Image 1 (spheres, rainbow, N blue to C red):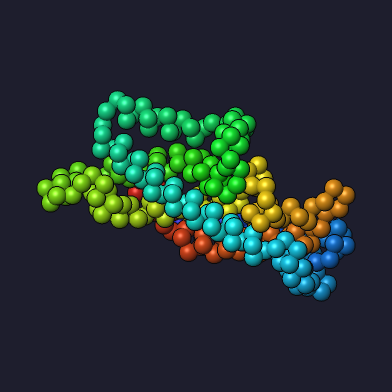
Image 2 (tube, rainbow, N blue to C red):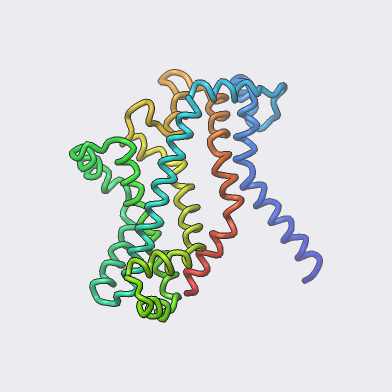
Length: 271
């Protein structure tokens, strides 16, 4: 490759990287400013870094309680999505009938239905069954996250030989034992992919918790961030500090797991 092509590619890559880094720069820099400094210059450095913004935000938004709620809801929801979706995909792959193909098509079609179309019926069902709480929120996440997960698992499981099932059956394993002891461990790359994709969505979701979770002690981090936005005033410096605290765990998790996303998606696509 010629030198000028390498230079142009390098410059293009640098500009794209800056484009993606800029939101994080604005977030962190402005979380260390006073409200007046934010209003005067959004992109500039603070005269004196206001680390007290983080302490104030941590206390006012009841960060620890909201963090625990977000963590529990995310872990339980993702755990259920992984187990239920992988089991459903395994059943659909191994039972090749017209009915199984139709069910898979229904799951795939569900991915394109906008949330607004099912919002009111969902709230009606949850209210009737007394599940306008964290339990109802977890069930809603499992329902909305299941379609994509089943589609990904379905592509991956098709590449696993049926001979493994037959050998396990000869050894006396039941269908459930074949799935839990043989198939489920083989799906590890896809488990990680599904976990990361759903964690990013569930951790940052505001709409579903705002509709389903009403009690103060059950609110998640995105809901608690709304504390800094009143009818007549907006505490941007505290809100940005709280937002920085909220995204740190998900960014750390993503950096450690990002290679597994690519591996899981490519494996599922090829197989």
